[in-house]
Image 1 (cartoon, rainbow, N blue to C red):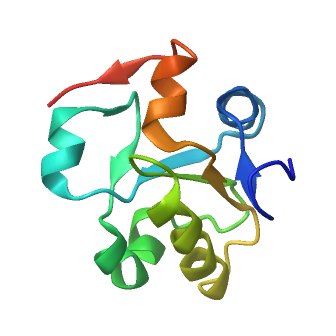
Image 2: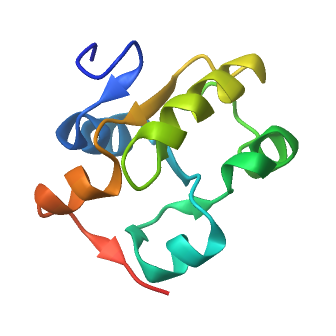
Length: 110
């Protein structure tokens, strides 16, 4: 999974992590962006709040995290935050929500 920077995963790889390893999807967009559209099943923790809220939101640090934003820029920064907090299996969805939609994977609104 080394195709989008060190910890980038494609939408297909993200789905495999979700299905096989119970990966938790965390959307690091703003609440407004999240309300418009997000990966189905994702929780919203905006990037500025990640440092404070991630450990409470995802107690099991052994689970993979798939971090998502609109384009992949914020989520790649979020990987560093998650790793500092002890989540060794933190990944960024390469291409963000746009790539997810382009792969015709499920999204939720609201």
